[in-house]
Length: 416
Image (cartoon, rainbow, N blue to C red; front, side, top):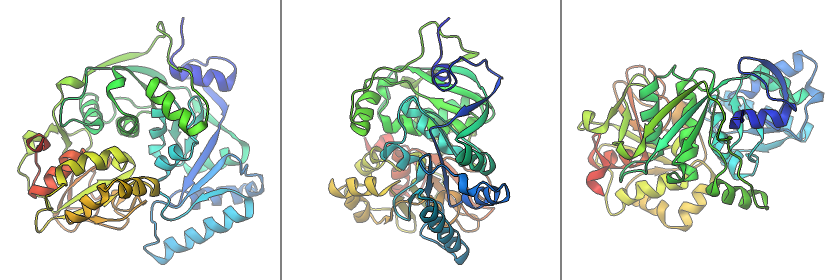
């Protein structure tokens, strides 16, 4: 019997193929934490007397969640992280570098075949690069940082067959929302989703979005194989050519899901849950107060380039705020050099770079009482982005841009 992609990666770490449900202790390639999860991890390390045992070659730190510091409390956390990094020789990506999941790819940590854990649920993003990547709690991350190992219950593996190309006006975010709408927010709890089929219709940026959203269905990981597109990107990052890394044809899965991408419409996840998905046409006309384009889900170059096609030569509707935050300094620079950033500024957007701020309601754009937002982020539960009475519709950058121009939820296809 052949092996799934998950089994191939775990086999390379364990020297054998573990069974789904089996508990294993496995060596990790990298562990990362950010300013939201580091404080507890540090306390665990100190209480366990393991701070001096941290393996600096495997640990990466990010200041990205409340960055720049919006409060004295956040500033003190940042101070502690910088001190820890200097003391132990740990790589720290400071304020403005970008969001951890994006930077882990850009900086070449997400090498196909690796096993990476992060003290953040959206670590699954790295699965787009054929990495078994999963989010863990601060305690597990702390122990892994000190020992180089973590415990893992081997997930069941589910094959997600993607069919057809993307129709005009459809992005990776629409694929992710359609999938979650079909299976529910608990449809893949502790399972590894392996995406197959017509993945060549999806850019790497689109795959990163889909892997990112896998956890919103409860998945432990969301993996794409190494195809030509991944091999080219990996070669640029790691300086050598990359071979195909994909599941065997006769690999067995616990379940299969079919998704016809070529029949999708622009989608939204209406409040208050990510699986409350609808076609944009079902909610078209809902007036909005704020648009947010950015985050680890949709803050990449392709996301801004697509949104700019609608915003170019147009203005954000008067009375509506549009916040645009590229996911990293590298994305920001690329958008600046290509003139795309100027489109956003000229349209009246508030632009900054490299923070998770608005996504989790930390800073840079909290919602007031009863306000409505269209956001390209990944969660829309009550109070996620501000006041408990505010409402968040999750959508693609194209839908967000069209809604910014009209001041109400709008089908982006009318601008294409």
